[in-house]
Image (cartoon, rainbow, N blue to C red):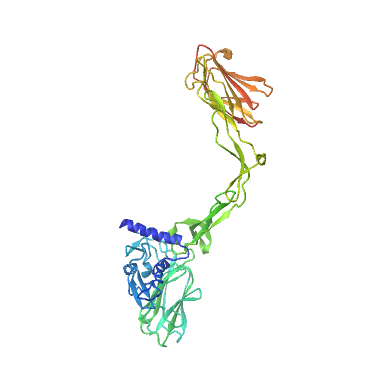
Length: 502
């Protein structure tokens, strides 16, 4: 049963938030109206929900009771879909009622089952009745004979409206936006629920005529009374009055509306999509928008506008370089080179990637197309060789066997080359070599390589350095020589390098 109630609540919320232009009462109308094209006892007729609250209850309503006024027939067609609202039969309740397995179940104003949260008299969930004031009144004088007379104007935002009269020779009419919703043309309306805009109106005709609306109303409502005899009301009898009670919003009552917010375009170019998000927003004083987003249940009485999705940034993207995957290393041991392809491309408004001539991207910095790669160390007569060349804008390398001790009696040269126009920032993050005056035993020596093939020594380092040491090579090519003698070894070093904009 709990699962069924959760499913019903889901259907209710889905219909509220995803069926713009349709009130919850219209959801019930759609279910009865789905039988209009199905023969009933060899006849086609129009079916409406049976919502005469003087004759039926919420549980009866949930049994999919539909009425044909043409056939004067009420028929039970099973059960309304779980999640259909059934509080149209008792609109003055302070909770929300939803059909679950053919029964009318109650939920708090926050749509939580068994919640203690209620609508206050002002229609505010869990409010304190401070945003509205009660309006009561009645009339006992006779209205115009055989004509409609204005009885009451109900302002926008009013709540818990209850209007009654005991007159059998007269009837109410209700007007919204200059249109008769109930009554009109001298005819009494049918006892049922009426849907107009965001409002659902429950009307009962006959000798005990009444109109009930929960609200908050979204349009100004005019109530009229029609008399078919002159002496309609008896001044001596209080019970013969047409009476009303409702709650009128005061100026600082919080009001809410659905607001449409545009989301960012899904793409900066090449044909993107911009979607809209519909949120419930609180209005400030005198209807000004204060921009504060609130929980959706504050807007449940309002139609939710339909969000739209529109194209945006409908222009080709700028051309750019696109690189492929790196190929295999050129060697099976030691240090080699690997290559990749670069393509000049752009994304068009159809969302397709176009390959352009290379010259189109001449104004873009071409990516590196080759870099060093390291395979397992090669052996020559049982000795490790460790020479390597690195083509990259940044990278790192270590002494052989790091973090273990480096071998004895080796000379390793690591050649570094970055993009033209840049210098090399070489940093030793960890450094532990055999110490000696003048670094004559084990050492690292950094050279600046020139295009003519010559090189200049910049620094020779040895010993242990507890802090990071940095060497700047004022060119885009350098060689780092690591030398060890035949006796003492240490852990060696870790070196990082990167391009430096001079």
